[in-house]
Length: 119
Image (cartoon, rainbow, N blue to C red; front, top):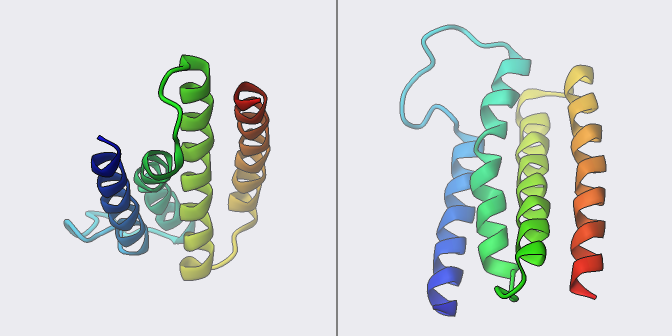
């Protein structure tokens, strides 16, 4: 089971990064998109990145509180990585920076809850 989760996590992590880098891989967008919208299209693939990180690094499957805190931490981390990928590829947008700061605060909160549950 553990090796299955690690393989699944690796596949999801790689797929998430590939789709965050090239979000129109499965088809072109019907309307023209600006840089802000392009970053938002990349962010949704951060959920795959976060799920992959969760499956790769989470170890304790007994406590629901720990699983939930770890899952939320990993998903938020994946969304942040996808947004940062968008910053690199599409340019820096101030409005997106506010979303990044909100996600960073959520990551710190979920990370703290994960740490408290783990101790």
